[in-house]
Length: 451
Ligand code: PMP
Image 1 (cartoon, protein in one colour):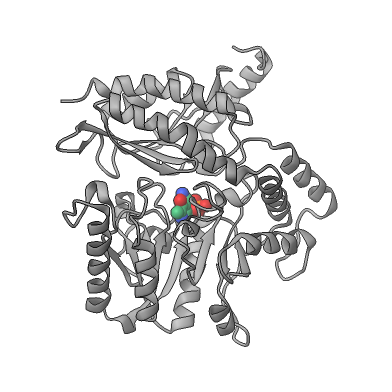
Image 2: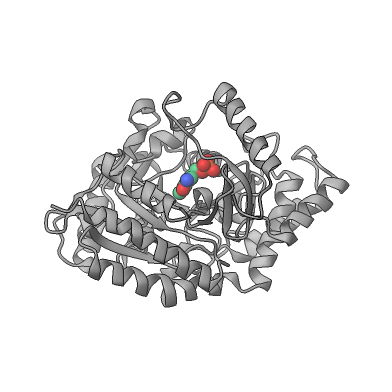
């Protein structure tokens, strides 16, 4: 127990755990064997578990607490809004939503200045696709095999992550293509430039063989997150933009995870100077303090719905508490220079340290990332690149690596064969350095599995 947590808090946590196991049905889990971690409190880049242990949060939860936990300005804004107007139907104007829309539009690229609010990322994806279909009068959606776009019906079908298999109905005109992914190239490329060229050729072949006249949209994470934080090689996003324009396809950039500063720029498309037709966002928009997501819409697509009804909406679209949290979050990001700080942390602390991990730990196949958005790919063998767990799966070895990170005092983000380094944009330098020291202890365990 630490001095910050009382015996009563621990007892309350134990009661919460019992009730959870009795009544809560958890996402993405076999309910029986699941042993969730209790969180008694969280502050900045720390969380306290059910035993009162203080852990460094290197996960930002599901990569959403971009400004850390319990930021006082955001908590105050939510409290103030709750006292003023806690809820209102989406057709009524309210100041929190108007201001949130202005601030989102201020930072989205190009003229993506009309904002449709949703409750999160998956419904943002669903609506973006619906807008594209109505705008183009076409139906198919192209999406990358290595991707995650959400857990609802269409979003999970669009997703490329194998976890979709159980609920994939192969419906709704979804067509998957192979993305550019230099470390595990589907095209046997040996350089990033070759990967760009071959991946774009494959994409155009897919478009032509599917029929450009049947394809409404292409959806692509600007930096795929859950699928491995693999950065697009130079020219890839620019090429995707060109191909979609050439073939009359709406380009949806999914920035649910990569957006709002995580990559060291406001949006990950900004690294390539690309402006999509639609951009989906959620998570970082308000650090996840109240559920919120949305779609930023181009003037051309907006015109489709100037006189024609947009057939879709949500009771809580642009919820005042969520929007007040977004206004305070984006303002805090601006005032406290957090996007610039994310860039600096990537360049000065995370990048160099991960390069050292790659040099010294034989289990590290590749490290890659930008800003506070990094992945370490763990392999059994560097030459064969055999992953420590299959894409979409788990392994006893990975479970041991994750357990080692936790016992070293970390809340890690692990996915399949990867450890992700995805702290808050405002994590203190010394806390981040300490977190990376602790992470290295887990790498020592991963090294023992190298063959
Ligand atoms: N798109 C991307 C790129 C995501 O990372 C996620 C969530 N991990 C989603 C969509 C779905 O968002 P949500 O869980 O808020 O529905």
